[in-house]
Length: 228
Ligand code: OAD
Image 1 (cartoon, helix red, strand yellow):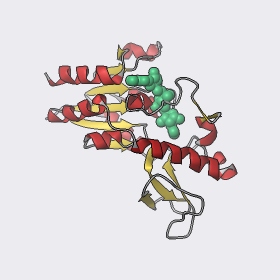
Image 2 (cartoon, rainbow, N blue to C red):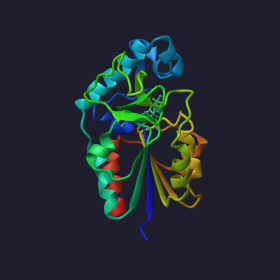
Image 3 (spheres, helix red, strand yellow):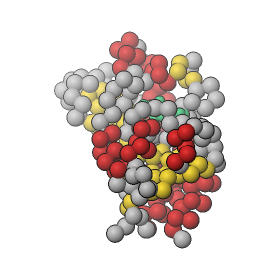
Image 4 (cartoon, protein in one colour):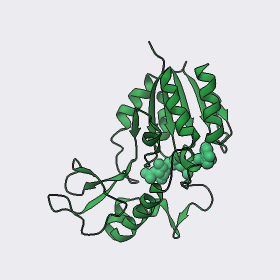
């Protein structure tokens, strides 16, 4: 039977595709912290700002392409049962060709009804406007998990983590839960790697092999080793 690899990715995975991470540099957007626009409270208080934040990110995504790290993960499927669990809302894993991608924090290209969370749609183009409604007549919102909202896919993600033979964590500051807690579900005997140029030095890392390099270089190198 194929060994199972779980890959947990964060914003650093897409950094070399030109998508800004959340907490590097000033981490601000128009002087707002992400925690100030990615919340249900922000949506209730100032829908236009929230729409604009995601419209800009969606527009930028159209100009970005997968980088060598995304493509390297696709190659792993030649030998392994690969499950990608991403905190990213971009579609770069899918565009690179990965078959099994689970989005923990939603998907930028999708929108959903504010009246019925089951009504999810692909957005044509990049712009969602105030007044754009679902067939039930309710405003559409970004299909994003905001701070303070439940993470519906965390249960299936933890089940995948619990069955992983190999865990590869890429480009995440591991500051946002419950995603960051997924590493603790991986079996004790599994092999664990953490690729991040600024990987924090804390006790959790003791159980991970830390590779302090950019994903675009380190992921293809690790994939080559795992395939050899
Ligand atoms: P962060 O911005 O917190 O962390 C990005 C990580 O990527 C940092 O640890 C960087 O060192 C690393 N990094 C930067 N460039 C890299 C490169 N070229 N290769 C590899 N790593 C690199 O982003 P996340 O951990 O993904 O949630 O943030 C988690 C969640 O917080 C996001 O999904 C988002 C955010 O608020 C929501 O929007 C709900």
